Image (tube, rainbow, N blue to C red):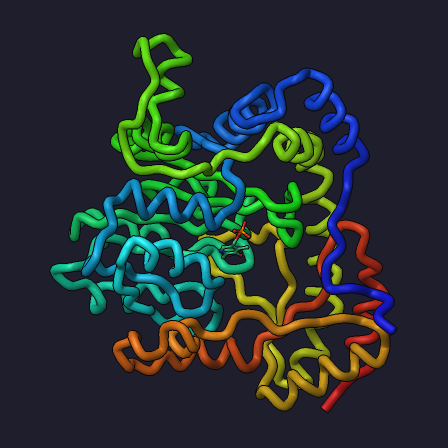
Length: 373
Ligand SMILES: *Cc1c(COP(=O)(O)O)cnc(C)c1O
């Protein structure tokens, strides 16, 4: 019997109150008071130039693909060790994905490998701040500038995290966040697009509102609203935004609690990890940790399976993570055949311990320490 799940969504207590408020206000479609409040919060706290709440991070990534005019034959560089959406959103627009490997020390895209993957057809680099740890954004932005490429930060896991003191999500031309129930700040399903490059702001609003100039109409900038571009129904209802607002009001508390759990694991598991040839998270000097996740890298797939089984027997659910996308049933025949050894090693050996606000971290820690091989 599982007593400690891998994830448990945390409710701050105000979610249903704000949802009731939104419902009673008589305005429950999108882009109302709660949506604006959440967007302003992010713009002010993290210096994002323009934010638009979306129904998911996947949707926000699809908006990036439309905004960058990705079309048949364009190449997009994406890490192989990531969630499907990071690549899928661009494949839907016809892109060919050129998968990049991770570092040996941690799963982020190896910035030193990117230049070798750039061709005449490359349009964009999509980076993923895995576990909320910053990619080497200095190197990546410099490279993008030199080759005139657009950079999207998939910051789905990276709320409240920084690269050399700069908030993640504010560095690339665009960035995307997720408020899926497995992330630090949640709304069930939900996401956000961040636009940092002025060129994309007006068009992003149009794409967000089903290809219409509705936003301009409401600001009185045009006298009719009509179909002007591509787009979809990307905006969430006020019910979702009201839920999210309750979370944002408590963001400091949520982050400090998660960080305390993270540090507890990190301090108490170090000797055990060394004795078992297991690596704890390596955080580069330029990156911060936002306690999105606590992962271990086992010596082998067999060692990982044994540890998962042991924890399950003790009622604790620990789980592995991504399967390299370049080997996926959907994409492997379209991949160019390069081997991506580090991505495959994280596929086989990375293990995530439970991490959530109400976690009984001492018990999980105790159960892990019992196991050795
Ligand atoms: C969670 C996640 C996504 C997808 O987010 P949704 O909001 O569920 O669409 C995309 N990329 C990464 C790296 C994620 O962790």
